[in-house]
Image (cartoon, rainbow, N blue to C red):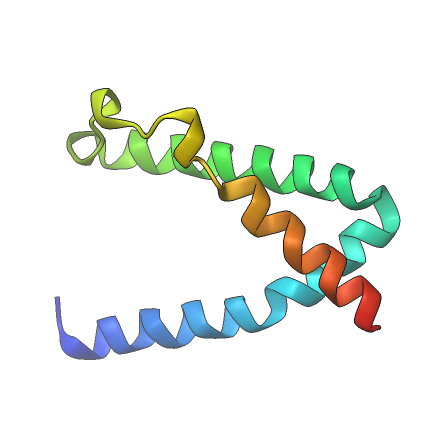
Length: 87
């Protein structure tokens, strides 16, 4: 893949990260903080399953982390509380 493609993907990812907290906060105001985390987790799982379907050779489900290492919901709920409190 050309370096320009990686640069474009990096710019796209960076721009999406900058608006993620604002969107999470707005969703949290409409559905509540825990509701927004539930919605974001379900959407993430659906996207992950779709990516595994597109690239099946890259996923090895035997090497999944244990429950103590799954911090995804914590990562999505923290900005909800912080951005809501700041705005």
